[in-house]
Length: 292
Image (cartoon, rainbow, N blue to C red; front, side, top):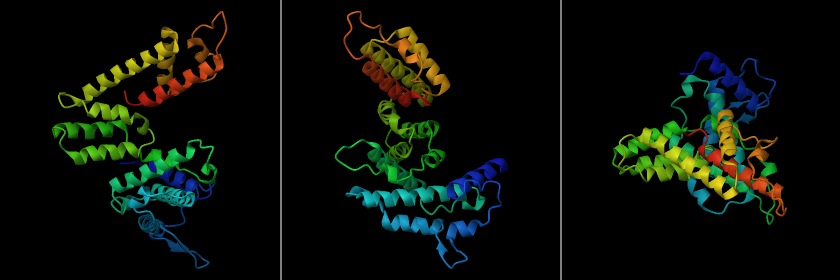
């Protein structure tokens, strides 16, 4: 249960996201029903509420819509509408009565989050043959992260799947949906799925997960050190600091200190080599951070 202070903070954040960023601290002018059902302003214009938005979402963007070819106009329309829904849900979540009134199920909402993230991933990929429309849309990634499923919840589902002797397909589907709907867990999907595929004979899923992650982490780090010719001790210290600080520092001398010595005979592009090392370390960090 969230505290009163947390509720106030959530409302302030929602107001800032939904309208004037200077509005925090001002009394909320509309009530729950106005935000949930919509309202008519002083000029006689109807302002869409949550119910209107969900109705528009399910009519214009049923799930079969995403299996076809989407135009840039379609993508922009969906991103705009779903972003508004994310902001409205964030605002309504400050009201206790919203619980149980979300209209769409958690599974369906996760599916929409997954489609939202799929479109974003497609848009941010460089494509010289196609006009980039990423600058024309706003992705509400902070709001997506607020509703994100964490690794602890995934492991609870994995335990449930294991207890069914890996026969409960609905739980397996629930795991996949939760991962796909999470910005943070998407990069760890292969890691999680490989673990699930090998849990038939384990006794303690949680303990096995910790051992599995430690083994995979060491194996991958050793591979990076070996293939890039990095200094082992310095690299391990650098990685430890990254996980401690929650980020990979790519500036300063830290990266240079783990690089292999410069060849006396020259040759090669050291800056290009450095960027290659940085990309591999960033991928390693994204894959293993927050799940050990």
